[in-house]
Each structure stands twice: as structure tokens, then as C-alpha cells.
Amino acid sequence: MGHRFYHADRAKSLSVGQTLALDSNGLSKFGAAYFPYCCYQSPESLTDAQLREAVAEYVRLKPKFTHKYPSRGSVLFGALTVEDAIWHARNTQPQAVGSFPVYEVWSEKFFTLDRNWLDFDAPFEQRIRYSFHYLYGQISNHCPADGQSLLPPRLEVLIPLPMTIGSIAGY
Image 1 (cartoon, one colour):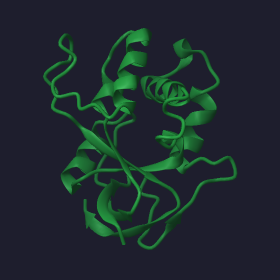
Image 2: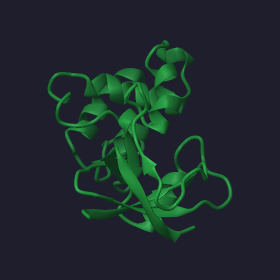
Image 3: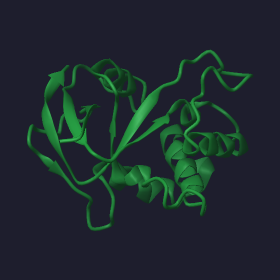
């Protein structure tokens, strides 16, 4: 059965027992929505959310990371608690509106990383450095020393597909 995590269904498109799999391009539903735009356009034309994903994928494709972590475009995003799942849904662009179900998800294989590194508002070159911190698995712990340094770490769980949605754990 594996380890239990939680996923906030911001789109309200999941159901108990549903199996999530990669599409013919090797992407999750999230990846299919973001990657055609964020990975093939200039950074200036991207939204903050698209830029976050483009920079993270650019850094992940460096040889030192390619085999360590799956692409963010090929996973389900989970959280360690129901409360964390709700926090991520409310603080990820585009933000969730209204209530949404939070599902249990189970996985033997997962990667826990600190999403703060991807969300810091910084110039492009600094975002690249922060993506390295993210992929090295470093905990932000009120870093960087300047700017948005008072944020507690925000751990997210990357769960490779395929996987099956479990029961509803909250709203």
C-alpha cells in the first residue's frame, strides 16, 4: 500500500478509485496543461506559474538531476497532511476558489521537496539558483537571507504516475 499522502483536487475532476496515468506524451494532466506553453516560449511571455515550471524543468534536465527526480510534469502533487494540501491549493497560482475535495493517495515511491524555493519572487538567474536548491532537496528554513526570508518550509510530495486515488480525507 505504501505511504499515505493527500492531494487537493482544485479542479474537482477526480473520483475515489480513479487511476491516474501519463498521457501519450508522458505527461500528467498538470504537465499537459503547462508544458506545451512553459517549455517552448520565452520567459518574458510566461505567467509566474508557467515560469516556475519552466525553470524547474530546465534545471531538472541538467545531467546531475535527470535520473534523480521525475519531471514535475509527470507526477501528482501531494502533501504530508490534509492541512498542507489545502494550503498548497490556496497558495498555488491559479488559486483554488471555494471548497474542493482532498483525497488520500498512497505510494511506495515519492519525493519530498521544499516548494518555497520555486515560489520566491526573484530575477530569472536567481530563480535558476533556487531551483537547484529545490532539486538538491534543501529545506529553505527561512532562506534566502534577504527578501522573502520569513517563510517556513512548504514541503510538497511528488508522486510518480500511475497511481490510484483513495478516499476523501477532507474539504
